[in-house]
Image 1: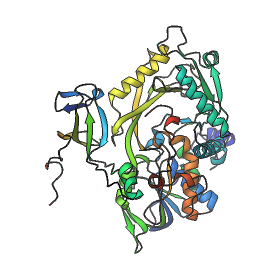
Image 2 (image 1 turned 90 degrees about the horizontal axis):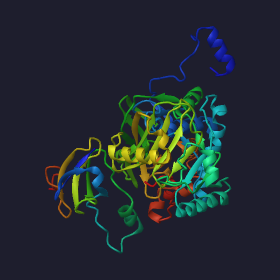
Image 3 (image 1 turned 90 degrees about the vertical axis):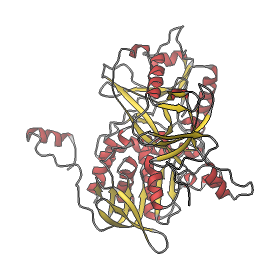
Image 4 (image 1 turned 180 degrees about the vertical axis):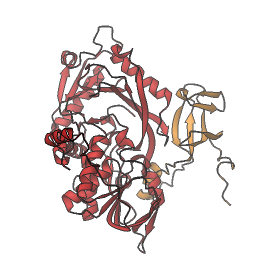
Length: 95
Length: 416
């Protein structure tokens, strides 16, 4: 079984967690066009490779947190707080 | 070579040395009228209908691996058309009607077995939602019958109907035309029939990029076997739709997940229906070889891994044993996963993309196998004419902008 590193509780079985999908999606302005809203609500990069996503330790401490995971190998490359940007080791900061 | 009882007899007398390969393996030509990316059921069916319905046979199907090695070979072989909304009912019932004539049409036995598809109710609320579902089907002209507890017990003697059953069965409903087909036979049958009409099938040929013209339209693809030009291109790559879309320069409202299935060791006939238990989260049928074929819900995190997690496997097996306790001694022989392309409303995307001359067939999610003949037919139609078939009209990519979704999540059987 896959194990996920909860920042609060340490490594726990996947069955204790719920995946909240792609992270770092920001809500557009309320006056945005339908096309922008559609992109925000439904369209995703869905990458084969590095994916930045949010998980919740639902059947544990309840904490939301972010991870960087490879979507083929499921290797977890980074764990970081829900409001943080991904570490520069996995996603180089924009120049 | 036409398959028949006579051909089989002739083969037997000739020590079976007379059989020829079912399709050619040609070298890619420099250019085709139409290219189809994805040699699964939908792509091969599209190639066949392009040649058959539209007389366009200068067509190639490009497949990165081998034919039917993706979801077409990884599903639970169930066919049915029990959907809720008129648009979907028309679409999926068209697929089922094509399945009903497919063995004859392709001269290839797809082993369609309309053994009946039974949905179980384990609570009063289940009974109400099944009544709504069956009534919606009847309103759409698709036969469905509500079943009492006694009728379910008679149809499926293997179910645990004891008074202290963990999940009591209170009733159910059935679509008698539902059933199974042999998964591998569907792509093989379409490939053989398309090849006979002149379509080139190119396996081991990976698409690495798209070639584009001055107006931004696609003009061909860059592959592991060289450049191939085409006037129009169709994409039918299921779980890898987002990857190909990214190469072409657009995004899709798709998330890829692993969907698992498994089979037990073979046993004598025990179950002659497809049984779905939405309440417990499992569905089961018995293959013609005798294996119990078991499926359940998605692994609910994005994945391209083609293998499922043990947590989900465990819950699907537990659900199966809760309704069929007599299966508890069976050993699992194989377990696998396919990468399915899930969209927000659980309905497919069929038609043009933001890139001119590039058309898509994706978003079937957990239910692509049952739709293969229709998906192929409609992709062929839009590739040949440049216009959507009326059955495909409600299923456009732009519905995710306009908000006119066709939410069939409740009809996928198992909640995902």
